[in-house]
Length: 69
Image 1 (cartoon, helix red, strand yellow):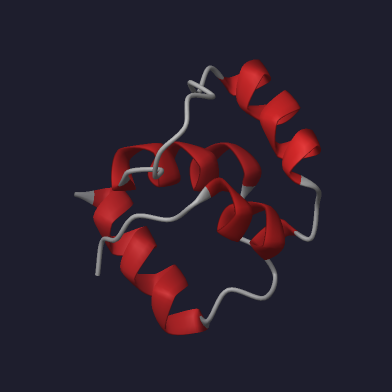
Image 2 (tube, one colour):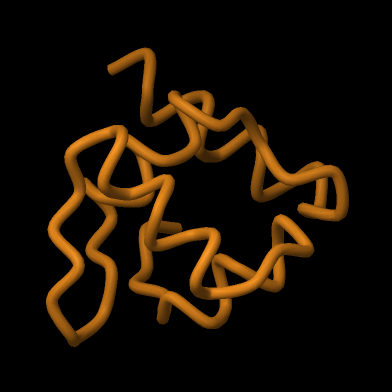
């Protein structure tokens, strides 16, 4: 289930610009360096921002399960 995502993918999930996403990352303490967002970063993002509305239910459930562990 766990996979990496680009910042562009995450911005699209939330329907915001990458610039807005970067500003939010600064607020919640996620490094803005280039490269993929690892599952640990994604878990932090989803905890802080909530799950994107358009995220498939199966993916949400898998993340919720991982967050409980």
